[in-house]
Length: 269
Ligand code: BGC
Image 1 (cartoon, rainbow, N blue to C red):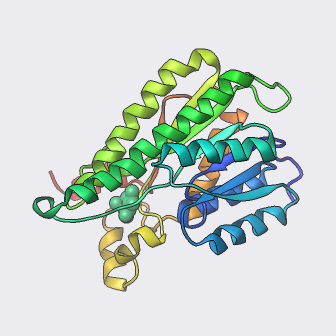
Image 2: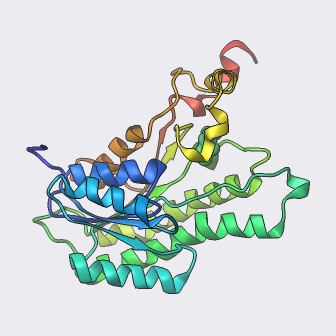
């Protein structure tokens, strides 16, 4: 039981919240007193399990299906959220995927899918949330800001990633989407930031950690010498959504055990 919840009475929408980082973020927000929308595309039972876990802490939660790359589905999801919770205070643009291949073999379909979900999906959800933040304005009892948007980026917004050109491109795009939104919306008291996770132990990168050899090789990229856990990101997201970070906008916080420190140069160069 959290006696001093930092997001008390606020309403949060977390996209792609039925697994991995999104699930941990949704649960962490619920633990801090937020009502949470658990967005998902497939496997409703996994979304319902997250909802049940959040509700066991005494806050409200609902699962809403929507493909974030489809405008009509995104609009319908936000309308359903407002019907249930009245409004939105926090958007976590988390949904994302990888479709990896050598560059010369990359199909247009795999390029397009990754850009659509990872980048256009963040635009569509952020636009809907912004419209509601602007309509409603600041509610001082809940937060100093009129709204908070957190974009799930990656270390690959700055680290180039061969074999994953579509994914790295989407994350590079998120960086300037986030910063440009932050610049435009700051005067309206809307804060926009990103989290740049490194290697977090989730299904998206299972090949990087599921054998001892793979994990050993991965750890050569992480000075802090451990793979990240989804909860590491949940904690950062809660802080970025709370008034504790009220003066922070337009920034990416890398939560990566030092992956962006170019560890190859510690004994070379
Ligand atoms: C990717 C993971 C990868 C990590 C570090 C993330 O953005 O989704 O697959 O392990 O970056 O390279």
